[in-house]
Every structure is written in C-alpha cells, then in structure tokens.
Image (cartoon, rainbow, N blue to C red; front, side, top):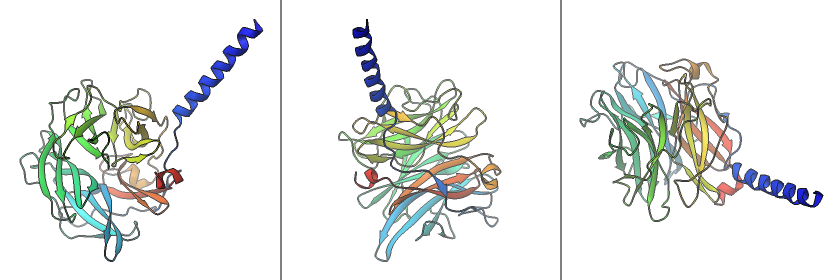
Length: 335
C-alpha cells in the first residue's frame, strides 16, 4: 500500500505545481498607484466639454522635440452629445488641451449621441482610432485613421450592432492587438449576449479596416458573484509579451460598480484565455471617482509605457480623467 500511495502523492504534487504555473503567469507590471490625487482633465466652460471629460485613449508620439503623450478624451456637452478632445503632455501628468474637438459627430450612426470611448494604436506612420458611434438608437464600433492625431478620416462602422455570432445588441470598446499574430490583426471588443450581459469578444482582420468575428462565443465572459459579474469590457490595446497577450479590462458587478481586471491570452492564439485576475487591481477611492455622472467608476482606456513604468489613464465617475502608474517588469521591456 505504501508503494502505491507514494507515487500517487508525487503525481498530485507535480500536477499541483504545473497548474500553479499555469494559473499565475508573470505580470508585465507591478502594483498600481495613483500619480495624482486630483483629476488631470475636468469639465470646463459651457460648451462641448461642459458636462464630462472622461474615458481617454493615449499614445506616445515621437517628435523632433522629443516624446510626448497625446490623449484623446471623450467630452460631453450638457445635452449629452459626445466629442473627442485632444490634449498633450511631456510628463504624463500635466496636459495642455486644444480649444476645439478633433472628432465630432457627423455621420448618421453618430448623430445626437456622438463619438465615444476611444482607443488608439499605431501601425507604421498611421494611427488607428476605434471608437463608439452612438445615434441614440444604436451604439456601434467604428474606426478612423490619422497621420497626425488631429485630422481624422472615418472608415465607418466595423462591427455592426445586432449582427454578431453571439452579441445581440450593441458593439463597443475595440482594443486592437498592436502586432500581427498568425498573419492577422486581432481586436478584442464588447458585445451583449442574449442574457443582457456585456462580454468580451474577438475579431480578426487582414487589413485593419474590415473585421470579422473570430469566435462563436465570448472569449472574456462575465463571472457570477465576482467584480465582473455584469460587464467584462476590453480596456486599452493589449501588451504582447513572451508569456502572453495581456489585456486590461473594465469589470462591473451587478450594482454596476466598475473596477479594473487583467486577462492573459495565449501568445500564439488570441482566442485562448490563459488566466485572469480573481480580484480587481484598481478600484475607485477618490471622491471624484465615486461621485459624478455615473458613481463608483474607474474605467481604463489608455496605457503607455514610459521608461521603466506604465501609465494607465482612466475615466472617473464618467466625468474626469485620472492616471495611475505601475513599475514595468523586466520581461515586458525585453519581450
């Protein structure tokens, strides 16, 4: 009997070690902390950004004068129409805003509701902007391109509402993977399943302009009883590391309290979820994150690596822009 038990115990120990290694892959960054107790961007005036300035996308732009962080943020007027504002910074904290928006509703799929919740990614010398076009009836994932981040050329709706494999309502939140995998471009996005849960899906493209759903079911589903029981929504464009595709996402519970989670997908197969955080890595703490147009919301949409740290830009309570930071792990820098 002893000769039988010992090998069995050894097998279980080995299996436990293997499973532990799979459950906790290396993180590309450490613990998050706020860089500013006050919002970086706040509503101002009585015009296009009077009611809210939130949910920002960011990108690091290299210029002859040095690097700068460019932010496109969602701005709402008092009627609830959204436009995209432009701000830039050399230190990642102090931003200078342009007086006028760089993208305003113009097409029928944007009318009255506006252009919302941008994400930014760069391929070559072209910037790709995914955003939500909302016309007070449908919210649909759209795309625009630019060479300078100021002048934008619309490419139209890339993921129509009500026409998905599993998503039966709106489409939003296009987080494009910043490099090709298996000869294709990939994008995580938000769709609504038949049970009215907002979940993460996946689409692929050969040209960055025309996108097709890559799965028959969500790749990032909601989890009952957890911080992401009601919503699992892609955040910024993912980070591709040796250990996987790291996607920051915005989870909401049944009370629609939004917190930040992390998911890791297979480096060679963006469909395959390897790991996700059991607990949120970032939650609302400041008064301006708890009270605003929508209470108790931190919503990360922008991320940039600046030296040996990552900066995470988020919307607070659908009214303000904040920033958090985390130290970069060595395996991210040397991917």
